[in-house]
Length: 250
Image (cartoon, rainbow, N blue to C red; front, side, top):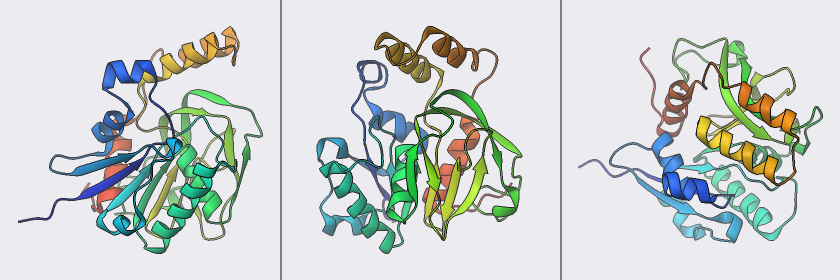
């Protein structure tokens, strides 16, 4: 009998009412995107101080760190504790997929610098340019490496200085580090492969209602998804290949 694969999701965000009502929470959004039948996924609401016992880290095949409205460079207790646990997982050479805030946390833990985005916040569907030379053909990207990929962006911070051993895998007009990897076990994405149009639009409406952005900014964000969507299927495949150590045949 094949042993059941186990994954842990570190949720650095609370569930919005919309996500709760529509998907039953972010746990389901992530597991639907990155999970496969027969796997076991545990969620830890790290933003609320919920963490796995360190002795239990060994039983997981991989980890995912979500986005957050918090800054990865803050020194809240839970963020420092998350950094500490990421350091331990890194030392164990277990796979970690870092998304947005998670991408920045991994950069911080590995000695990089994270700060406010120099060209301002981003809330939209955007294209990122893939650094094809940095990707080994036949790795989790498969043999057909795209020139660029569309992804939903929702952030106000960025990786300013990469950790020494990190490889930039993608960049964009406004951001030098859209995606990076370290060795074979850390894979980090600034955008949100798990987001869809509905989630983006609800966030846009929410930040507009709270006065964080102006109407023009909100309209421009929604306009980016008027005639097209993110490359969700491709993102899903790449992230799953990475987490599960699959070598694609394409």
